[in-house]
Length: 615
Image (cartoon, rainbow, N blue to C red; front, side):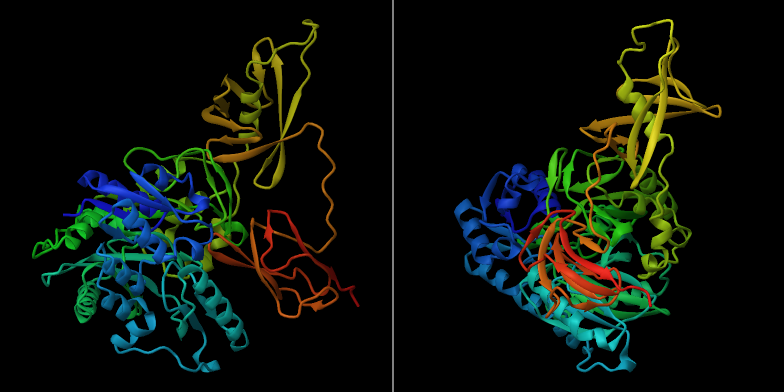
């Protein structure tokens, strides 16, 4: 029997494994980088061991340090979570060689399937050895790991070498393995996967299907189980998945992924680990996959047949990012994160935790389960709309609109969903009464009158920044209380404002953190009454859109160089993703301040491009 488990991971997945361990009476051990010293997974574990450093290569990718940590903390088993070393056969062997229990598949199965190139060959497929114009578009893909890292779609042959270089660098940073390959890119397909679970006694379960088609940067955003509208193809997918598992004598939890297009299934890969989206399968089948992983690792058999599925489950990944600005990751303090009852929330954060630059920007996963897909959609979209999410910009509004979009609601989505619909899904529609509610809440408790009570109080004005635009709110103190033109103020205090607009009462919950204010789901920033002169930047200035590290600058780029609009100039790495900074116009690079390895904050001046004068 396993009595103590070290989770070789961080954040949400570490907390999720610890939760099951607590229910089973198993002691828990966390590992943490310097950046994660006070992270939630470190705080909730029974014991924690420091991995000196912040970068993944120094910490969560150091299998030797993690094995040493498990031994020093008295753990007798290691759970890898997902990402980092979860599909690293060498790490699995090191765990086993140290006399520890590995809660995962045999190293041989990992070797056969964790490399996507070997997996394809095992399934009778092969990557493209050479690429011609006739092969386009193609997908450059990391051979190890997952999560969309190390993936690039190439539509022009001239871009292939640069995208191969970028994919290798990103894969090496995320997984410690820079191998990449090229395969045909199937347009307009659906991403469908099968959850499998196998024991050491020859039983293999195929636990339904999941649709994970809504993706950004090839990373999943919304997942659901079962995948809708597959018909007879479901049985085919189950058979192929079980066959893949048996081909490598698989043990434990894994996922076989397919691209479904024109009624046909194209094998993508097998992930030899637990998936981020496993909660939707748990909800539909009424199981705990982590508990079953532990049971299998202890040598216990599974039942001959899996449990029966019931209902429908949908999961949405809440990210600290701005979808309207190239999905730029966001940092800051997460002041509050709560969802209504009845929604499962898996997270690695609690109120007041900082969101840094070092790791994935996912804050939480929200999961709804209901008897039908339509009911699950309504339940999750409404819960996200009503959730309190106070802190940096998130993709919450995008999630709500995606769940309510006719294409998704009608189960007609594909992996190109955001390519087609992102502008309409990110069009800002701020609440026009949010600034007034914020101003009235701020005014609560202030004196109603000046020194001369027989004179009416002067109109008051407060300025706010909302959705990137400045807004003014006007109100007045009177003997009857606070008033505003065209709106009846029913109630106003520091936390709640009720306005009557055209005969309809609307409630506004107001929460303030210094200059940042949240009115229901709308974020505002209070502006000073007399603004300071704005910081001036020359036209063509390129400012860092996020905090991060300059990982490289285009080869040979120096001040004085001629550049074209859209030409990549440099790359920033933030939250395990690379972000390309391109020339805003055709002209001359008059200044280059960025250097590889430089740490930058939001708004740091990176370069200046002077536009060519019109002829």
